[in-house]
Length: 274
Image (tube, rainbow, N blue to C red; front, side, top):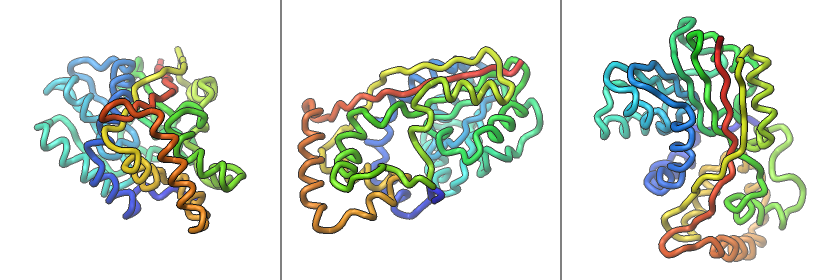
């Protein structure tokens, strides 16, 4: 099953929870931007940019002589990114609807590439990485952030509860796997196969904080976690009251004041075009 990132329920959720979502993802964005080491004047490509991060953060760092291109398959998500960029007055950020497997750019166009939580959903990662290698300048780096293991607080206290009640695997075996690079070596190996050199990968813990209630974050997870839609749609109506109660109880253990401090374990990886 192909994930539908532009589906109506996900777009509604992206708009409804945009402030909380941006706050929750800030730790990942900051970790990836720091790791990417952007500098003034760079030309940057942000793949699977969605609603605009880390493209927006990068645009603020490369300066007026730099340029960031945010690419995503979903025109609807890019509209949200456009609004955010306009609010921040970032004329050096351009938006491009396109496919990472067929990049609409000339060879050696960019100095740096980034991708936050998108690489896991590339249908053919080797093809996408070959394309990325093509459009990078010699010496250009490609930097990625991916999810670490499913066995961590955010997932175990939400989707993990559903899995416990239904049994079986959390994901459709024909679908896309958000945790396919939970072992850092897999992402590093894919970069090496595409011709990148000086590759590296490692796990890192970052803040993953929801500013709001347990009920809100549970509604958010159900709405935006596209790969888990087949699982959620299999839940009998009779089981939802118990699942909801257990999720609220599990999430409550991470509440600190007005926020929910899950924390997240992510994978960072990079490679350089020589």
